[in-house]
Image 1 (cartoon, rainbow, N blue to C red):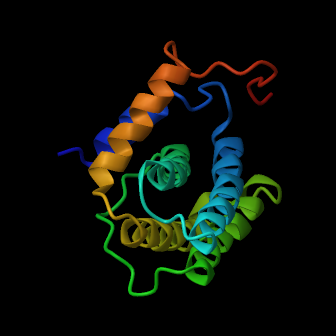
Image 2: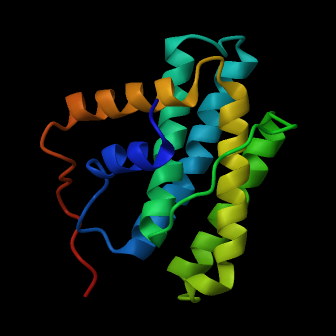
Amino acid sequence: MMKFETYMEGAARTMPQSMPWRDLLADAALGLCGEAGEIVELVEAGESTGDAFDDELGDGWWYVAAAYHAMDRTPEPFESSERADAVELFRAASLVAESAKKVRYHRDELEEHLETILGGLRRYGAVLSSLTDSSEAKVWRQNVDKLADRWPDGFAPEGIAPEE
């Protein structure tokens, strides 16, 4: 069975390698918000099972992995959330986004916001764990396979330059 650390390694192949860590953290935080919206839309439409839903959950997991990767941190195991709903998903995403904004654009030190970010990521992961009717390992494997098909040589966006 795949562990999250293994998933993070597979997902990292498709993270912009030349992107400065503060930008990757900000990108991940915005991605968490966007994916939360897409997941909620599917839940509200009654489409919260099956491969299409797992695909969206996989995208959410990718941004969780990207945030941990940006901060060079390894997560603790994710526990299912007692509250797996839109409010909790957005609350978790907003915690990460607000702190990532301060780290990226206000140039605050990561350590000032680390516990808030890590807490938000744990909450987000817990909601994702609770929402899936599959195992996290299945969702992670599908996501890594999808990304490998999309970018067989790794992600290489044009126009992203290292920070000067």
